[in-house]
Picture (cartoon, rainbow, N blue to C red):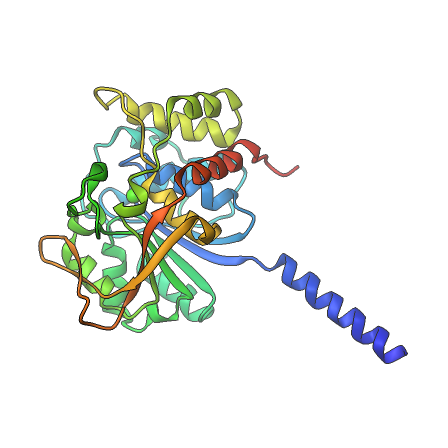
Length: 313
Ligand SMILES: [Ca+2]
């Protein structure tokens, strides 16, 4: 009898431990260009399923992107999440970068992006989901320093590519930005042997945030929604005529949170020098790609997350 009670307590403790265990994640992003990165960063930070090991800035003015990330973390009370400055590949002119201009209170980590990613994957083999939602120069650096590292990720989930559908729901695939912006880096990334899940334009181009939802976020007036809508306002000011933002990058996060909203297939994908992602049906699959999304339900769920988030006391 006593043994069975001890055993029961043991089982209960296992259950409790399982309930609080969070999925370790890293997000590599180009926050500050298009507006969708901000919504992806917001979603990953406020999702209780995740333990965010770090936000890594990729492509372009990574130092200025980092200031935007640091300010956002500070405003939503998560300044303990490391921000890592990736390889700088240019100067940024995007208006959202002004949101971080002059911000100094929370500073990014000193560690180089590739070292940060490699260290975390090596310290937690098979446990980390690496999200990428921008061009991938940092991942090219990872491949050069440690070609085995990306195989140690539990999964690599990326907003990446265009398989059967292009921008604007065009039935002809496009050279998707995260690929074509640095096709050499993209080729290196895809050749890594990682367990890839790609959210391409096929599933992301449907996710537009309409005016009603934008107004709702503005009226919520919380630190999270104020950060998102502050960045949105800077972005929208340069869009002409006004158009709905498309939250491409948030979809990559959502494919892990809510796989039931997606239909996928396995495929062998190659990246061409021109930045196209081409399926070769004659070869064994090297990835899984999103084929369709339950778009309205996806928007409903992310809106709930942004609206309900509060800072812990
Ligand atoms: Ca992006």
